[in-house]
Length: 471
Ligand code: NAP
Image 1 (cartoon, rainbow, N blue to C red):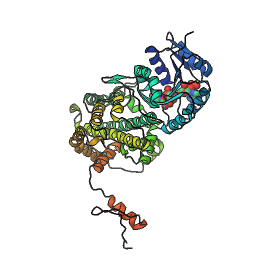
Image 2: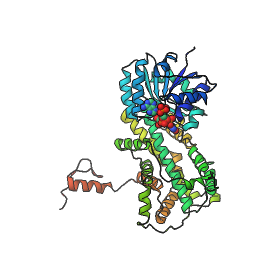
Image 3: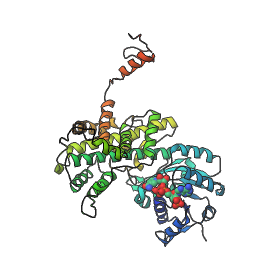
Image 4: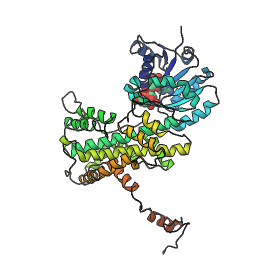
């Protein structure tokens, strides 16, 4: 029996679709899953008639692969990944390549790379985005590790990846855990945009009194614009338009408690550690945390009286609700800006040498945050690879300048109406802080010096100063 080109461990939603993708590109495959019955039902189902065989155990799996072996793990992140690495390592030989395509914490990947580098096989930590459909039709992939290991898998990944006008949505990200770090930030941006769109929905529903179909029409309009055309706006329109079996809007039947698997939290923790400011992403994480307190919120609703809902101008649906659309555009730009900024800072701190235009390029297709804005982001960082913040690139600055007052109006109106808009308001505060040459942190410094003699710098002369403050 001829040996397979490609091996896949983990027949979850992602693994199943990725192996079908690889096989469809001409890579005969072998699959292994901890629970063998899943392997059997896959081979009798979607895997039937394809050049895919199933292995009973890891020894059998490794034996069925041609050398050097190319193995992708798509399993639960954390201890499960460590367990599988430990189980398969004894069977791997010089030149073999093991890829972790799960959502691993980038520090886990750093640790594994260090440990496995002393062995003879290669190891890649690769972020994969695109969900089930992306995995099947072409995801965006973010591989990190040694360049030599990447080159050993490059041709396979380029064929499997989503394709956009300037190439496949995969590139070498950098050393160590950089691939998983970039995927983590991708997910942080994803959290932010999902929350921004959810806040827009809440305003359309509560302030605009709109039905699902009416909201879907507005989202359909937004999705035709250069600034908002994106996968997330596209699926938001679908979510708004979809009806339940009784003909009502299904969205209104869904429990308002959002789940999370950790990548948003890791983005925020990394940002805090690195001193990167990501308040829009942080607000989206807090939004999910507060949403999970359903019972408490229902109780508090009867005690805490906000302002009675006042209506305000969020725009005319037949014109695409311009004030609300502007608020969403600026907040979305700010969300991408914060993610890019976090990656720039992390790249310096961890010596990842991240190529920002390339990262924007591979996010243009296949992944959850794909959007037309990413072409502009790619251009902005190509024009200035050291761009300190996306919002000062001329095209983005123009967008912010012409739409900021509408964001301010929407946030002010929402505040007066008692409708929470944590991401919209964080984005507004972020821009207002970033564009303010003199912030009030001189007072923070004064207080710190007053109570703790922490000293301060002055605006009018060099040096470090302390004042004997009056008691
Ligand atoms: P999943 O539900 O996260 O993981 C299921 C797979 O992990 C199954 O094959 C399961 O085997 C295996 N597994 C769990 N614990 C194991 C252990 N201790 N030892 C060996 N195998 C173990 O599936 P998924 O949604 O396809 O995700 C796979 C990975 O991709 C995850 O890291 C996920 O975070 C990441 N990811 C998911 C998406 C998505 O949209 N779902 C997108 C990007 C990345 P059994 O069948 O035996 O339980």
